[in-house]
Image (cartoon, rainbow, N blue to C red; front, side):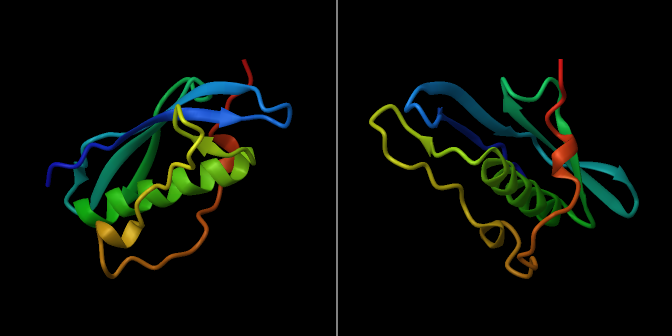
Length: 114
């Protein structure tokens, strides 16, 4: 499975100021016989990739997309393109039709204070 996603846009603050934001998912990779991983990087807010795991490559990608959606929800700012149009991320079920849609836990630790 070859799936690398990249979304480039801007987060819009309360004062309507725009900050560049790029959301990138890596290629899924085998961690061991029972787990696959996929990296998520939301630049420049994250200083290193966040590893998301699944039981298969499709599930790892779907979970990574859900984490990206939760990340955007967590920063509480619209994610828009250069024209100000809302950027919608794909559904996790686009990658794994059986993926349960629920909020992941622990994303408050993704953004590190520098």
